[in-house]
Every structure is written in structure tokens, then in C-alpha cells.
Image (cartoon, rainbow over all chains, first blue to last red; front, side, top):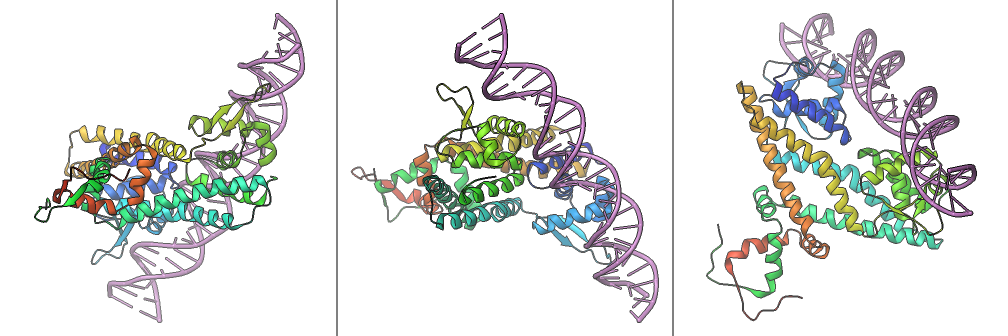
Length: 187
Length: 187
DNA sequence: CTGAATTTTCAGTATATACTGAAAATTCAG
DNA sequence: CTGAATTTTCAGTATATACTGAAAATTCAG
């Protein structure tokens, strides 16, 4: 690996972090490298900079592509495939959350729903079903909330997040409030 | 493994899901079993129901304990250690999020902060630092928001989440509103 | 259509992680 | 304090995952 120290630290960190996610070291490093690169990179450039085999890089790119984390780019007059990460960091976040939802939350909800349907044959099963039902409702509530947030435009979402819990005091006030016809919004 | 089918499906699912997290199959299954059990279980009971070795169970419990996902219980007149999950499902969620924050987010923030401090020695490093700075600010904003939410009582948090994006229209209205002295809150 | 450039696949191997059984350590009733 | 009950540790092994190099497949300039 032959990178400026600042970049190397970042790349190595994401390699390690990757394993806490489902993604392996190689994939984490490739992503980190692309994220920090001002220009799209081709597979050979990645090989040069990270030092693992060509085929490993190909597999890593394929995986990143399947997760929508990386975009294929072409440079006129060059047959090589170049890859880049999304420009806008909020697009990346939305994507990460969405991928997680698909891969982890949805299958769990499906499993829970099908089990909750079944008729329990013992007190033990009845108890277990009740617990699963509780879990199901909670997860569903969280994903519904998330879908709502996902639908907001980024700057609105940021506003809301920046308010944090302050929005709650507003919420509590709602019945004490009345629209003033001539009032001005901040915008 | 000798469990009622409903419970077995759930336990196996969490075993598989575990690997998408950082936790292994054994740990996932033990947790799922404890979650569905009306009573705390001891290591031997877990061995009987899940069918892996005593020592593996001991290690799994230790890991769950380190993550605060499991509580040690004692039954009068019995020397064995019994374990149970938290009763309140929101406690579980808060715990999971908190553990993740500690294990994934905090180290990343620390790394980013220390790199951002350094003086770039090239345009490439400058560019990389700018990207890291953007990432840092975004992560910090999200964790600040999360800390705010974590501090809310559960029922308030649930209210807020259930409102979803509707809270945003409230937020936009805030300058058009005025407190009506005699107004009644919902409570 | 040809063949050089490029990417992908895949069997084989290396590495990391999970799991076991036996032994050591700890706990506590008597 | 003793020793049976219980838990924990750990070296060895099994299993799963990551990685490589070579060969196959694909792409496209000429």
C-alpha cells in the first residue's frame, strides 16, 4: 500500500470497520479509497494503491456495485471501467440505511409475521408469540418513521434533525396554538 | 436442537442474522432463546435446547453480558447462574443502539478528528480532509440528534416517532403560531 | 471478423473465526 | 477448610471466509 499517511489511516480504518458490518476488509478499503479520490478510479489503480490481487478488486467492486455504493464511469477514449462513490453524502447515508433495511429488517419482519399467524399449541408458544408480536410492532413503527424521514428533502430532514428533542416541546404545545392569519414563516 | 417449531424458527433466524451484525451464530441463538423464555435459563438448559458445547455457551453468555444484553439472575437454593434478557423492549433497543455507537461511531469520529487536525501536504490530502470533514460533521449531527432522543422518556419518544414527518409541518408553522392563554394540552 | 485489452469466474489455498473437550479456576454448602 | 458443583480458560481442530493466479469470457478498436 502506497498512500499519503492521512489517506492510508482512513482507508485502513474503514477496512477494519467493514468487518463489524457484513462487508470485508477489501471492500471497505476500496470504498474508502474511492470516497477520498477526486477522480473515478479503475481496477488497476486500485490494485496499485491497495496492493491486493486484481481478481479480489473485481469482486470487491462487484459487491459495492450490488449495494449501490459505487457508480460505473467511463472516460472517453479509454476502455477501462472507472468507479466513483456518490457525490452527495446524504445520498450515501440514505443508501446505507436502505440497504440495511432490505437485508436485515425486511426478512425479520417477514419471519415474524408468518410466525405470528400460526396457532400456538402450548403456553410456551403463546408466550413466545406475544414477545414476537411486541418486537414486530416496534420494528414496524421504526421503519414507518424511517420511511417518512426518507421521503423528506435533505434540507428539511437536516432542519428536523438539528432541532432534535426541541421539536417535542413544539409537539406538546400543538393544542395550545392557533394559526395567526398574518404570521410570517421563517422563509 | 429440540424446540417447538415456532421458537426454533425464530432462534435460527437470529442465529443467521447475527452474522450480519458482528455477533456469531451461537450468540444470536442464545439471545433469541432467552428473549422468548418466560423464565431465566442456566447454561445447561441452553446447552440442552440449542445443542452446542457447554464451553461455547459460556463464551456466548460472556459476550452477551459484555454487551449488556443479558442479566444474571439467581434462584434461591440453586447455585447455577441464570440469565434473562431485559423485560422492556425499548431498553433493548436503546442498548443495541448505544453499543453500536460505542463500538462503531465513536472510534470513527475519533479517527476523523485526529486526521482533520493534521496539516495537509498536498492537494490530494487537502481534498481528502475536506471529505472527511464533511463526513465528520454529518456523523456528529446524527449522534447529537440520537443523544437527544435517547434522553426522552419512552412514551414521549414513541409519540414523536409515531408523528413521523407530520412533526415537520408543525415545525414549519412555528412562526405563524401564538400560544392561546386558555388552550388545553391533550394530556 | 480478429485479436488485444479488459473483466470475470473459479478451483485451490491461506487466513480468520467458531467450536470442542479437557483441564484449571472458582464458588460455596457442609 | 474440604471437595463437589459449577464456570471459565485455552490449546487444538473444524469450519467458514477471504484471497490468489490462471484460465475463460467479454468487449471493442481496427
